[in-house]
Image 1: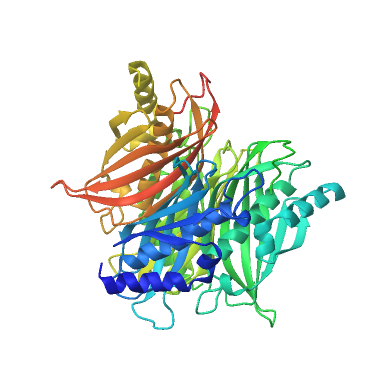
Image 2 (image 1 turned 45 degrees about the vertical axis):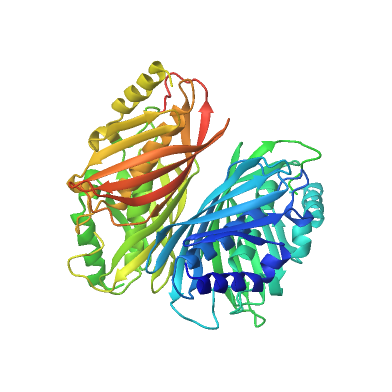
Length: 148
Length: 148
Length: 148
Length: 148
């Protein structure tokens, strides 16, 4: 992955108001791979303390979109076709990490799996959710319609 | 649906910091039915202007959880087992309305469909997304672990 | 829907060895709608007697593909992008009917919902499963690559 | 995995009329893992020659059910809650292999991923589909209601 492409993705991510609100950070980036980490905030939690399903679905959606884009050599415009999340274990940690990996990088459709881990302050990791996301590339270049 | 049960669900919804952040309002409530409306805020939109996939997934998750709870006569504690959203049309409106309807109200598992509509200021409605959500009832009564 | 288009779909269905094996019949056909009925055979049943999940998934897949094709004015070649079935109730009847309705008839992608009902000899109907299926149109015309 | 448990699963599989029809064989079995292989028959193929979506969905369903059962120490009775398949590449091979691995072995719900590979006579493998399947354990022991 070129440094220019990496920079494009980072800048796009930094422009996202949604990710700003979540205090999300990119913690991994590669060709067909994108990783996002958030620290727990009150609005992300259920009364019992674990991260709620909406926060997990949001991280799945965003990490998958960027993973899909990271597998393309040039600026791309994707839309999410469908998203499926299986919640596996309560996410009782203080941080949530979404690790999105492209499974199929097609011409029109891209399929991504994003695994979401909950991490406690002691560093214990739990697989909170797994997912499958289908993205469609709308155009190879659309200056005003980047992924963000 | 008893007025008491209705009030329980409304109070639970009003305690949700996530829904407060989204400025969400209950616009419909019945036995096995729950409807939420939000007005667009900057963090909910893509640069091209339409509502983003994360916002739609969040409304699907929350509306489905409450629809599932509304089908039970007493305070219930649900967890989302899995959530699947199909994005059908760009959500270019100013408001988003999630209409969640229970498809199967089982003893252990509940299945809900939430249709999300985008509404313009002129009142034009577009079906932005449809979904299927599976919920599991963890206990019939858990005072400190209500749906919110 | 033109009679010619209807005939195309019926002939395609009749060429299907899979549907022949299942003894499946078209019991409804319209623009964006396709209905298939099968009578129970031993290989379709679990030991406890109900239709198994594979038979239901097969009817979902086939009925959705034809419903998608029925929404197009001319011979079309589709591939299934993804398929999601929620099993709602045990299918204890003697017949299974899949009713597939197009939810979104897009240029590239088509989304279909197929509801599968179990019917007893007394005519009692149970909703055994609901589903969401995404199809992609590969070409508008491909003589040797019809939907079947 | 005990030899007795392995034998139970094999005998259950051998009783399946559906698997007999498909000429399916168990080609791998372990704790939380189950692998099935089929050779192409005419009813499994589309006119263009690749395996059809229904055959792939059937292998996903059956392999996942047995993988879920293989993670339990004693005879178990499962029902499929929901099944989601993403078709990734045309399955042009002569054989289809479904490799199902338990992702979460829960008390009530089990989640399995089954990857389906298409294999040519030259031994070239293609990932034709991936999936996520949710199973529910209905009872720990039900002599007349084994997994098959």
